[in-house]
Image (cartoon, helix red, strand yellow):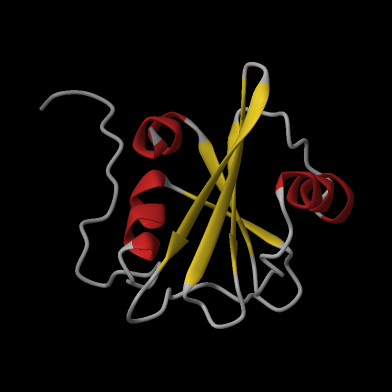
Length: 119
């Protein structure tokens, strides 16, 4: 289910750490009031705790919210902390790297190419 959502939607990361004791309503209020974004939009909103070993992903679908939760038994997420920015938009590919414990900047990954025509 999560891959279907992430593959079709924009993913917003809450930069820095978030108190993951917040439930759906608390996270939706954070999206709306602090990030100035619409929690009912067709986007996924991802949050990470201070220890960087837990994630919550909030997503609205049709008539209710999905709340995905992931806890690592070992290791940490390479979660961005941009300082002044509250959110960051990432691609599905970058989000998958992040969930796999990799940093967003993958130096050996192929860059995206947008072809204009076949040669």
